[in-house]
Structures are given as C-alpha cells and as structure tokens.
Image (cartoon, rainbow, N blue to C red; front, side, top):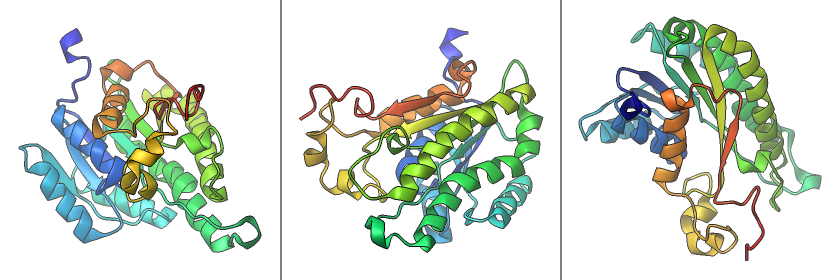
Amino acid sequence: MLTDLFSLKGRTALITGGSRGIGKMIAAGFIAYGAKVYISSRKPGACDAAAAELSAGGGTCISLPQDVSTVEGCKALAARYAEHESKLDILVNNAGAAWGAPFDEYPESGWDKVVDLNLKSPFFLTQALAGPLRAAATPEQPAKVIMVASIDGMRPNAQETYAYHASKAGLIHLTRRMAAQLIRDNIVVSGIAPGAFASEMNRDARDHGDEIAKHIPARRIGTDEDMQGVAIYLASRAGDYAVGITIAVDGGVAFGSVGAV
C-alpha cells in the first residue's frame, strides 16, 4: 500500500557513528518510522546516553559501543549484534573521520586513520554482517546497506583534507561495486552524500551556520529532517529499486552552484 511506502515497522537497523551528528539524526528518523535501532560508536558513555535519549519517546534504541576502525573491530561489532538478533534489515555505515593538514606536512598517520575508517571499515563491516543481512533479505523486501559519503567525494573543496576527499570518493565508487554484487542476494546498497549539517565533524556548519549558508544555493545548512527524509527513503520500500546510487543532500552545492554567493 502507498500509505506504507516509507514505513520501517518491523525492521531492525544498525547505525555506526550513531551517538551524534548525522548518525543520530538518521537513528531518530528510523525510530519515528517504526524501526528497532541499534547504534554503535567508539565511546561507550556517549553511545549509552544517546540510546537512552532516542528511546525516551517510546521507540527502541539499543547501544552497542564498538570501535570499528579495524577489521577486528568490525567483526566484534557483528558478533555483539548477533547476540541480540539473527537478522539485519538495514545497515548504515556512517562512522567516519577527517584530518586536515597542509600538503607538505600531511602525515601518514592521519591518512591511515581516515582511509581505514571511512573506506575500509564500511566494506569489512558489511562483510561481517552479510549473514544477518542475507537472512533478512527477500525479493519482496530487500535488506539495505546505506553508505554515508560526502559531497567532498563528488567535488573538491578548498580545505586540505586529502584523505577525506579520497576516501569519500572511493566510498561512492565502492557503493556502486558492492551494489552490483549484493543485489544478487536481495541486498540493496546505496549512499548519501551530505553537505553542510551541524555536527561535531562539521564544526563550521555547527558554529557558523549563517555564514556557511551564504555559500549554499538553498541559502541554509541542512536540518535533521533533510537527512532523515533521504535515509528513510533509501531504507524503506520506497527505495527498493534505487540500487547503487548516492544522493547528494547539500542544498545544491555539488551540482547547482549557479547563483551561490
């Protein structure tokens, strides 16, 4: 029924980086549309507090704190999830990091930290959770994997965040390649490329939103609802046929800069 097109009732989701920022926005949206949500983040206290806050309105949010920056960490999170559930309807690979430094000073440690978390971990966490995803997936109701990339993976900006740009561009292409393979198992892989949203990672948007908005064609930074709308679309029946795409959610920065200040 069309009235159920965006419903997530009866579905279970796992969101990495879910204790704050974009991950928390998506978690709140999924809960509002009926999903049972597990959130994971590196800091147990923050993860527990966010889960309690997200559950306060009557939904279900469960904390599974875990550092997923290594393959071992990805496997550990999958094992912890398996203690609670045998199936996974929706995986959101949102955990990420950034590192800025001048070209001549950019360190290998910063490069490895960013690329490992932003590009390697989404692949290996999805691999570790392939069993629960396949168990949930049917032709009538595919399982979903949603990659949170960035518009910086679509076009460069002025900041010297070399590994971040490269990792997010790689993630968009990885989304396409994984989508081509996993659709055979009724798993739909897609992506979101956020622009300016107020978060710990994007402190400029958080602390100077009015100034940042002057450079966005839509004349504002993104809101929780902007992120939730796209994530719910991709996670629900509405997005079942949207395979391998990455949607820019940026107020027109990546593709419509004409008219920007």
